[in-house]
Structure formats: structure tokens, C-alpha cells
Length: 236
Image (tube, rainbow, N blue to C red; front, side, top):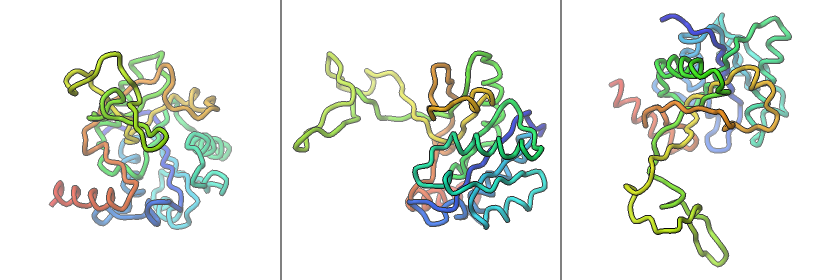
């Protein structure tokens, strides 16, 4: 496979609210973070790993084509936004002679079923649309703010997030809806480095559709159990 002219960043901090050492949890015999490292080295010209975990630093340094950024504590908190983490990784790496490409992938370790082919096709899609700033992967959802997404009011009342003038009596009356699933984020470097308000969906963001399995994002112990179950079914 010919590698695409892009840089992959894998942001994998030490702690996690939902699962202890989440990024080091294994699917099969491979830690989540290593699944993403291996995929990134197969598909992208060069790879950055940014982490505050000594274990992940040691693991990433096994791969000669991976540059490791030791992330500072301020960027490794539960509420640390993602974009400053990516910007910091690029700034630190380039200050030490690493050359980032004009297209930057953010590949989350919590998406273990992301396909190599999806990385390649999303890259080609963003290149195709010159005026687009970035790309996010999306997957179909059965939820819609005009049909079954609710917000609580006072005294346990509920209301639709988007109330229409006429009642919606079935999903067939609605346009298809998609969720941003975290499988793939792809940025034009200039846009990423000048994005200071931490918004991912911009006025010229485009979407790339992935399958339901690819869209699986591990956030809870139940997600991890399900991913391990799916992995056994896929590869047994």
C-alpha cells in the first residue's frame, strides 16, 4: 500500500474517567493505542503520538517512524479540549525537526475497527474539495431532534429539541440523519493551527460516511466488552 502524504496524530493520555488505562486496554492481544499506531504507520507518511503515559511512550518508541511528544499535564486533564493537544503536538514536533504534512489526521485509539481504506478515501475526498477546511467521519443514526431527541424542562417535563409546525408521526417523514462518531478527523494543517475556538464543525466541514462497526467508539466498560465481542466474531 502506498502511504498518503499526510501526518497522523494519535492522542492517547494516561487517565480516563470511564475505563482505567483505557488506551492500553486490549482488543485481542493488542492495546487500543497500538492498533492505531500500526494503522497510522501503514497508511500515512509520518506519525505523531502525544501522551503523558510512560507506558504509551515506551510502546510508541518501538516504532522507528513514530515521533513521540511528551504531553504536559495542562493538556492531559479530563476537560482538556482536543484541538490544543493537536496544535501542541505539531508545534513541539516541528521545533525538533519533525516535518508535518499539509493534511493532519486525528486518529483516536478508541476506534479500533476503523478501516485503512476509510483513511485513504477520506484523504482523497478532502483533497477533492479545495474550499473545505476539514473532514469528519459520520454514521447513520435513528435519532432526530424533531422526532425522538428530548430535553428535560422543570418538574420532569420533556420537550423535543426541535419542534416542528406539524407533528412527525414516523421516521420515514424525516431526512436521514448522521452522527459525528470520532472514527476519523482530518484537517488541513493551516486551518487546524489557526483554529482557536475549538470548534470541529465549521462552515465548510465535509463528512465521510463509515459503517456502523467502524463507528464504534469505546468510552465505557460496556463499549469495551462489545468491541471485544465484535473482534472475536470478525476474526475467529
